[in-house]
Length: 446
Image (tube, rainbow, N blue to C red):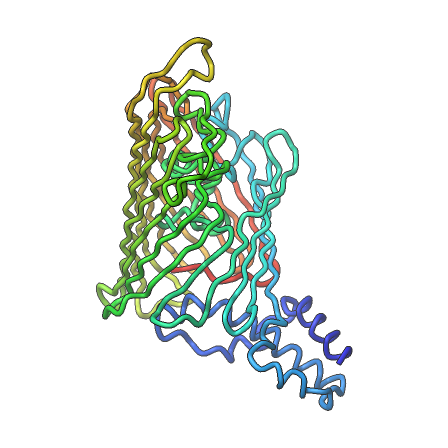
């Protein structure tokens, strides 16, 4: 038994070094749902196939299998996918303070080099009822200091009836298309401006529970709702300790005492269907409703709509050529209570409604295998207020880029940004990015 466990461990550490052992055994996807899960199943199949091959070569055919047979479906929990993705950015900008135009936590921050994201991912079957996922992120900030954070750690049900699924733990809120994505999945070097305004530098994520229901419609339709904590630096529009940068007042450290009214509610509905045999469209609408800490009963509401369209010819090879368009628009209503100024003594700021809006649209053209050209345009606007917040200033940006994938495990990207900030001026930036992936990595949604 000890020998079999040793072989299993070797298989886990070595499966990435022997590609293609069993990928061909995983059937081709017949639907979008199959496509979403296929990459994950390939990685687990590789590990299982390698165990069987090593046992055969080392004469372990007679190993005790009665224990594994008795375990039944639980045996799959012995295998865990391990992946590591690293991003390195380099470049230069005319902005005197790059953080003023690049506000995302994983955006370029300095002239020169930086590592904005290095992610360790772990995922696997827990038992016949649950899967487990975690993402641990390491990064180097603009001062050269290293940091680490538990980005996501959650369980996911696999066998609930009535097309239901439950996610629980720490995870990104499924608001729109970009917010749930990790930086290595982005089509551009930096996060869209409107996302960092609405949800802060690290996106909207927290601890909580999410329920989804796959509706019995002739095309894909899914309804989701998450109930999450409204606290912490990753809930900047709500009860973040840094929210005074939005409303300018002293933070009201209200306790969670009124049930759901003190929590963050994030509903979403999205649908997908084929326009033709070569065109697919995905449409979605999201909301985020919860308390903010400008006062004891102040609230924030964020609304968003998104769309994704993709064309790929029937004769495409390795997914190329293709053309895709993605866009999101968001609106935030921040009800700021009467509050003491955080910067000026004896000054009281009035109660007011702070309104922000913004949008982006990006087009990607897969020119030929492993070469993709992109163009993104975006803007963000605010209605002013009694506090002159740098986070709510008007800004627009145009970003063309070009990405080359030597293989599916690495990429090089070059991107130019033209930023225009009202009453401040324009800036030009040129960024380069290199990414590599080792190990297995769970598939991302279409």
